[in-house]
Picture: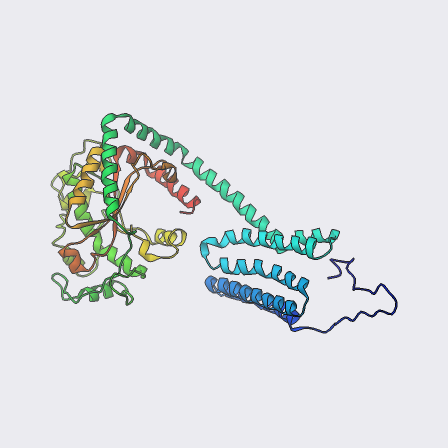
Length: 479
């Protein structure tokens, strides 16, 4: 490259009568590393652009990365060829060119590492340039301009810009919920200042640690082979019912992690009224409260699917017209569960809805690496309490319920919990399965649900605007 290294000349004899032979022929090592690599690079970017315009981003990514990997392997082959010919400096040069491209092509296969790859590639490429310019070849003033215009330097600038914007975004996210966090922390400090509440927190921690010790694995949604059992008062089998309401689960072994998002959602649909009935029973037995449905909200009813009401008719006897409005001695936002039957609860309780599909896709992309089996909160409910002692009693009641298998307990009321991760918000979140004759007959005994146990003092701060701020905080953090 004479334009970069003008002082480099061919070796000249120092004495008269001495001849220096130079082989100016083209070698196969040169052909692999230079023209063939350039041709592949051209087709690499053409294929990348074509796939992108066709709306196939995954294919575009793999077209780019696989071609880069192949180019790096060609450079390695060329380096071996130069070494075999005795041209060790050219061999080292190609090795230094190959390994940054190899690192970028292999690391880019993992989606969550995509932005970190730019930093890795930039540092590796700049290191190679320093070795090539200051060790292998002679330094010239043009070498610096070559380094600054190189792709490695551009990659480093891009990564540093991304890192700076990321830190600024996280700072803005913290400032967004700072006021809410201060209020949450004040409630927690007041709670810990009371000896009775502090003792209840320690009892809750002990119980939660015991339940956590029983769960050996992280909760996962598991597949289950459907039987030909008939649904209640219908002529449809479980398989036929799911076929009419959604796609069937792909063939898999019983107990294998679930891979179908459609099947997971339909399992949650079947489990939904069963969890509501259990939630009402647990809340009634422990003095808990449920969120009151505002007058302008429509009640969360089951979808109008033929035979669906018959399926659950023995589980929840809905009454459309309540006899009386439940009293509420806490605030207008909650109703005492013990004063309601299933029909009144359907009308007056603001039940949690199934997780919406948009949020499911966000969690799959941001947190679960597209693993559907890790979505264990599609079907969820909440119970509210005035004191930690009532919350602990409810958890103890659930632990003793023979129909419940607790898969995981997230005790955010643990004094050692870092509440900064949730903007100061604290609760107890359980992942559980309902395993009884009813769920077995419906084929959902493997479905994992979520139940949140909350203190009313904390929940009051989490109003509509506070929750919207938390959603923005969560999105800014990419969670």
